[in-house]
Figure 1 (cartoon, one colour):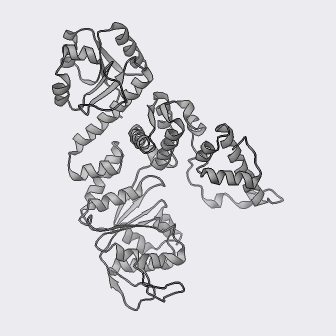
Figure 2: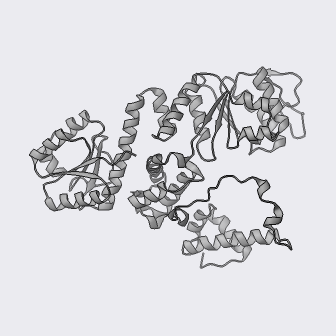
Figure 3: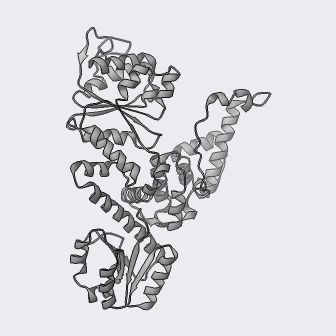
Length: 468
């Protein structure tokens, strides 16, 4: 978000003007107020105004052409207009720099709208600083962020996309590595051909070779027909190999051959096939460490990391959090037909101070959960799960397994693992039910389970918590 700048309050009603001025001043904003039409125009000329908060009737009386002319000349300026004729949801009518509020004013809603105006200005500033090229529009639509780390990332993606070089995208889980890969494809000359993703960690080892290279009929039990592999599907396009650090050694050798010779052999085939594919790989692991431990081939690593790109974790670009929240909120409100108006300043501050071990994916999931559970109104600190309230997270630097020997973790007499796991699960189920007041649908959401799955677990475990 932008730094708190000047907000201009324009209203002939001294009581409303003073109330709004005092409230926003307390929230840390720099406020200028206008008492009459003369001071209105004088203030606009002599000050760098970011946001105008004005009574609609007062503005119409003193400056009837303001919306059509003044906002067009100052595209970063935002008008928050309130009055009897400004009712309805906070949609942007007439001009995209105008937000509306009904009377009587709700100060929490006003504060939420000021924050949304700031986010809007951030997006406009980014558009102005980077131009309006197709590349910038595609990047801003695909990956959300106006922070310096994200602008540097966008610049790198734009440069990389123009080449056919192999790219290695590194970053923690939930940072958006596949989004970056898709952006590279869409900005490249290959964008009219297929973008084919493969999650190397999600496919069993004995099936991954066939998935990548295809197979011929009769090559193994169950191979009843010829099958195209992902490489052939991606011919002339882009193949995205996600979680490449989990690929086993035998497949690493075969992948290296494809990168070197641009050809592959389907399982059971007697001759090779040529292929023209751009490889974009991604991992949340440190491949250099895996090379040292002999778990990843050094020659393959250098083949993959011709151009390395690192996606910054969310904790290193916290200024993007309000913009991300606003984007997710608008999407989930529309998808679920809810009307959550926004996040209060206090709740936004809490989320900006959190470390986000799950990165953007965790934030997206949280906003979706809050929209479902809240339904309408403003999200306040009491609506947030407890772990966000404490300002702490479960994020820790990875600890080498050698520092945690099993005899330090187990009791002397050993442990019944099944009982321990069952007790752990029961504890969290009961906590979720307690927090939701026994509502199984809400409890299931807290546990990221289907409601029917939760009910089955309750029956199986003979746990009773209120009526179904």
